[in-house]
Image 1 (cartoon, rainbow, N blue to C red):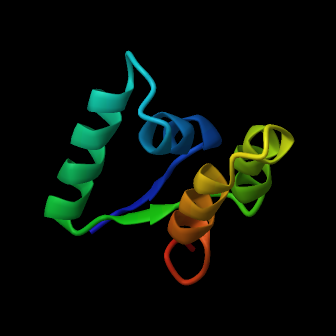
Image 2 (image 1 turned 90 degrees about the vertical axis):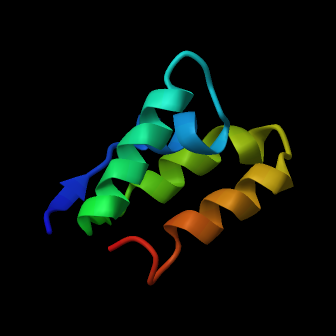
Length: 75
């Protein structure tokens, strides 16, 4: 098991399914799960990923980001 740090952009690609990186990030996450790796990120990540969804009133994205990045999901 490893602790793997993800920066903000990987969460954005994953949640918003942004091409061309979405499929690579999904594959990376699947590999991490198969190996029992721990996904970690900065405490700043939630604020960074919420900036645009809040600006454009995308509550669907806000809820998804809070669900995946809220404690105790990501440490």
